[in-house]
Length: 165
Image (cartoon, rainbow, N blue to C red; front, side, top):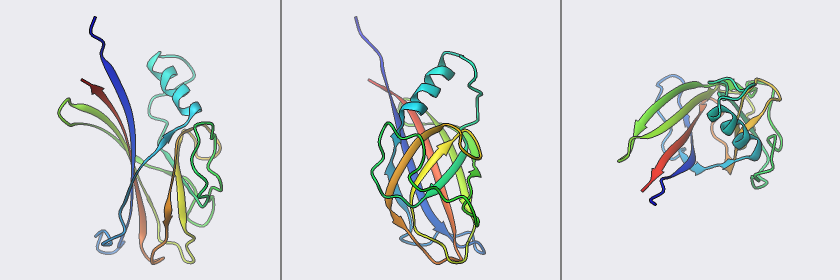
């Protein structure tokens, strides 16, 4: 009997852009792959099973923080999440796309954090189902990102479900 398999891949693209021209700052882009945490996996399974209390479209709150400790599947929060001064969680713009040879389904969230005077380095990000606390879907730790405080920080998260032939 032939079996079909699927793989879930999470990717995060972080980059700075000039808020006046809208152009990305050369050399500021980082692409990393994330850790789907246990509680996030449970929420995905509940959604697939049409189980309550999961509501479609709620995993669009993007949080950022400063902890560079490696992500772990047991994480339920960011290490040290920023919550004030333009760093509070932002509701990202959601979309669903099809791409790749097999028409992979890609769930995408894009969040843009404003320019902030005295910006601290950003070393982690997460996707949540609420503006504060809530359930974390994914956590990613990356090389600390620091740039000119007059630029905005754009974070794009893509969750791809792809068939494995």
